[in-house]
Length: 162
Image 1 (cartoon, helix red, strand yellow):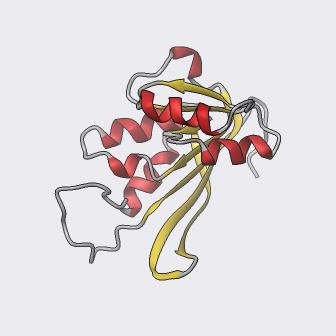
Image 2: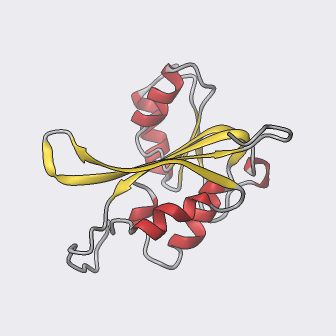
């Protein structure tokens, strides 16, 4: 599942790795353009709202990818969006979250994007997900820009904690 898939680049990449992939976005225009950009794609593109997606999606995905989507949301509803992303991850599944870093020196702004603080990136670890990696990385070619790279996992029933 690719959250906030926009024009489809990330969803297409995930599909190229061999995953059966669904990408969703609240923008019907973005979904239409993604389908046009990638005719014949195996990705299932869906118009859906992260704050109110189908119940069938709960804990249904082996891999959930969230790249710079929740940072476009103010709080509220940012906290709910983070929780809803986490609820997509199925038993034994992985969540990969990437977002801009709020470093404490980031000047306040009324316009998005709003970089995530450490507590916000850690909040993806709710609902039974455990962090396996949370790090800050530099953006290639932009040494002054940094991103959170966070990975979380949900244990499958009977899976030992390692």
